[in-house]
Length: 310
Image (cartoon, rainbow, N blue to C red; front, side, top):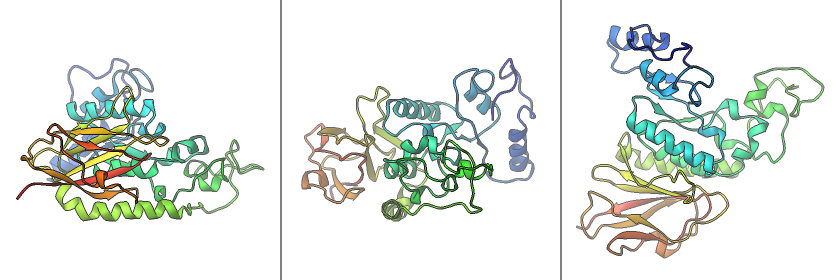
């Protein structure tokens, strides 16, 4: 979904500026539907790439609610990922269209991108679930996708399976496939970790659903720092913390003062993607300025409950 007008968004818009936006508005306004969302599939490319002008301007003019974006094209925690995530959060906070936190798409289920999904899958899903004011996009099969250190037969990849090309070889760089059935992954350890995460998310969703978030440690666009942390805006209940580095642990770092909490408030660990958590990390001490987190393992994610004094 791109801007096809060489001069970009015109100075005056009519109701037919964008056909999909016109359909959305007719369904919503013409038929009295309370809400009808419009998901625009675009990678948010640079200006004048794939289309004309600035893509966000076009999406706003088209009345798109959400766009796919391109986070799925970068390894989590990489400098490119950090810059892009911060850019998308800035767009979400300042514009009418919101880029999705996209975990994986069928287009990226392709042997050329296997290295993006060898690690970091659970922390990607964690962010997608708990950034409650940013929509998430994830294609089917992510929670059981096998680790491919080398290209597997093309029947394992959505991108190549749907091509249905013919040839002597069914392994990349050939795009041919032999089987008539798509082969789902059998990654039991990932499925177990993802199921545990989803069950926990279900248990707290009534308290956080659709609530705007407040960043405590936003993504560092320079990628000097790999830890991120956020909570809810008014009367927060939880703090979410994640290490986006899949290779190295994070040493001591501080979570700053949490607004809208009284003196004597503490943090109590309620979930971690890891099993062995030290006492210091289970109840981070407050030093009058911030909560001290002793460490985070590579690609570890945690949830702390905010406990107010009685």
